[in-house]
Image 1 (cartoon, one colour):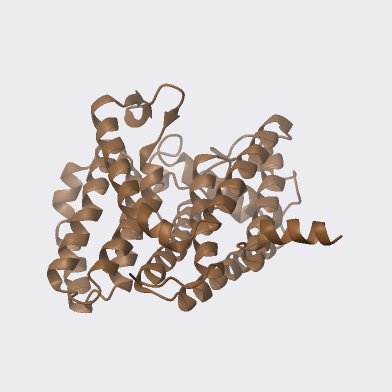
Image 2 (tube, helix red, strand yellow):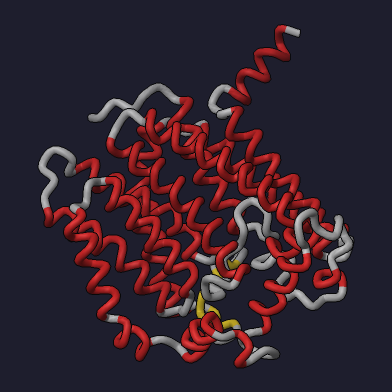
Length: 366
């Protein structure tokens, strides 16, 4: 019995139990919905179980890495990710008109996923290095560090990932004390540059925005996703149609129902009540992450924890917004629920960093 306690302590000493329970609960909900969304496809559900298992192992490994070591990994991870993005630009494989994947021999990788963690890590490290003498030029330098990978990802093109990475970097800038007058100025500049941005956007990106304003203008084309997901959400009503009883899902009217639009499947089957419980579960996880952020001992840990937490919230907001028809369709999965391995591993890698911040001895700046 004593040996079992020692083994249990060894495997769980750097795991935040409260956060882990929330994550596992969401993953379990995801598997239940995936089973229905795929028409009881056991093979796909089994594959997702493997994805979850790999992601949990990654989370455990990262949670066991000391904070000083995580800090040292920031620069190498950023440089490696940037080099891989340049490699994608030069040698990446083209699939459906986009160049996002890089063949490294034994497998294919999507370097933009690495940057979702590398960017906040690098920017947090950068601000931590300049904490004592922080000036406006340091914010400019951090912005350059952010915009280099964002520009390379936009060239692929991958608007959804570029937006998420830009958001994660902006959160670090904000938490590091970027003055409000600059934030407002940047907002005004972004709004005034819209005509230029519109001229440089791809046709499909323009179409997504136009479809947001009026999905009915192309109901069988660009507006199909938004129209069908809206029907699914609305038909769920208050209590939903029941598990595996959603007509939009089971009759295959709903597109991408196991990935980007899995929230519409959940809404149709469990209704407003189910959505409310799902949102509460997400809020519990976000709340725990915010507590970890508030307890962080240094500039570096506070910035990285805050950025990961707010980026997690952004994933949820953007996915539910696009499925509900209030945001353009940009291909963002619903965290911990949508089918997929890469996004799952990236998300749990971030949670592993949060657990390391919470459970390791406080980082002493050197």
